[in-house]
Image 1: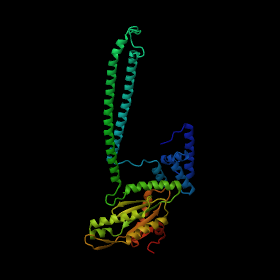
Image 2: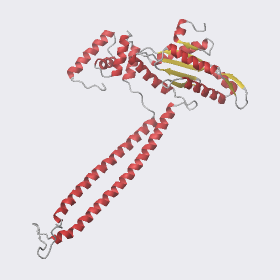
Image 3: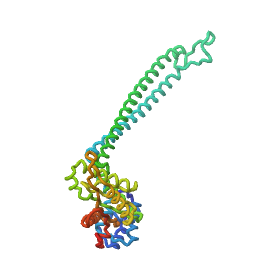
Image 4: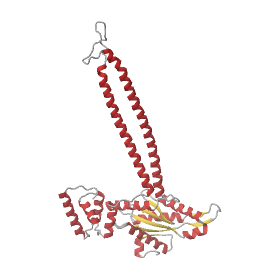
Length: 376
């Protein structure tokens, strides 16, 4: 189990407690369910513990669907990037490894250079001349214990200096080469990182409207659901459909239809908070994610969007002809703790269908759709 490192006795204790929790909740002892409750009793994941505590305090049942969603949120990998993104990531890592290796070589070379300087220093020390007592007629050059005269030692110093200069030049040349290599690697890293960021942006952005795409919204929804379960907040989701868009395209052409899509995207972006997410879901459909927002507040937000759009008349700039209004139908649903997110999206889609069936150009919540109030 990821992130857990318990001794045998401690692990057995947690395992017993997890099994007891499973039995108490009437939950089947599957590997995934056991992993959830083991992590819960071991306090291994603070966010998971908060989510489970919220469910328990709200007397929510641990259904199979809810447990599957909890496991997917807290234990399942977030998903693999595309092949191109993976390749770029590998290249970035390889460049980092090369740079680290280059720096390692610099350290080794510097250490070796220091060792050679120490050797030269030790070799030069016996050849040092005492300048305070230079040789005179009364004090001729004397030999040390090795029998070498001061003149011989003085004559050896230039050779030592030459060797020191050669070592220094070699070290300087190596430093220049390393500096050049590191500069090239830095430039390569900057290029790779820029390409990686551009590719990620392209993979997550709708090219026509500039909105995030479905993948981004689903990721944001997973994060919002996890946060909601941790602190007991509400999350609302709206599915949005442009009314009679196919007929509009057939009548006025796809170029004008594209402008309508851009207009709807711009209006929704302008009405939402920074924490909210609006994404193009596909075709003429959009999706709104409103974290920490109850159904009533979400309905007010959606009404502002709908009213703003309905109040605008479209004009063909090339011909000056008025081509009508843009209206949207919107269906709202609120997240139920631990439910599969696909179920939440389907409920919002059902509310959208109810809004369209009731005459379009309206916002319908799941509460209204369930109570049969649509169209009243």
